[in-house]
Length: 436
Image (tube, rainbow, N blue to C red):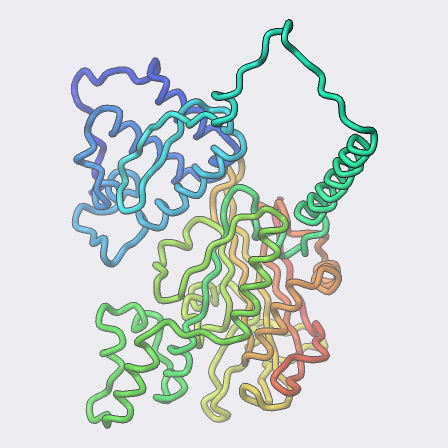
């Protein structure tokens, strides 16, 4: 049973209140046009605060009223309010920096609280301290010609440097690789899910493949310790799951994403795989790094894909299953070597777009997964390579996935590991479906 908001009798009209007028301008700004949940979040907490009901603005209350959670839901298991609160703070900062830079009031939601604070914007100190001189006392200082010439040249140099800096920090949208242009956005931040490399190593160590449900169990990782396990096995299970571990290739990929997002003024955040909830993927923009071995959330989207990951128990390594092979394609693609061992390996890059017409809400998911670390790195190189990814889209029958309401693109890549790095990467198969 869904809990409906309680409307107190004779609730005062907020429309004349300049604070509420500010809220209305914010929710109709570009920063909030494509996120219904963030608009509802801001409208609810500000209305409650302006009506004097700040005592009700708890995480559980917001989860029930804004996100339609059941009254008995646990905030410890479901972090949807905290996640959206972080996104809301970022959007508010962006609004007051860009479209709302002249607003007389500023809205802040302090960390650790959901109660909005309205404050007056602090005027620039120079504007308040410097008053114009009366016309009768204006004097024109005289400077030597060489001082004026130096000042002029200095001004020109500053302008040239400023223009160069602008060109470097504002690349054209067309220069953004097409797959990243589809998932990175000016308004809606993209969340990058970092793989749990400790979990991946654990799965290989204990010799089984715990499903996503085991990964989400409250008792994790204690539930993975089987009866009769020796002290060595228990030690490694607790060691590999005790801290958030990732790998150097993942650090390199995330650093490249940060650099590209900053230069193109796209919002980007990072979350560790273990800190994610399945409901988070219902709406937003996401990049999932790594295969389901170390990033179990990939399994949520496996049934939508043509190239699906499987585990070859005989070879003790991952393979990709081609659900509907076309002429010239293989039914399976299996790596010939594990991590850091020279040999052929494979990767898939998948873009899934499911947006609603009009308001644009929905989910955009980019999956980059390989059969080993080198091939995952090759998948990332493919995504960053504008020409290679654009050629693959063209081969699949697509110009660009950007702006699609519904889209599914997949690329199967073959690469070769040499001294721990990917070499000679090539596209061996593609799939594309789209609706505009």
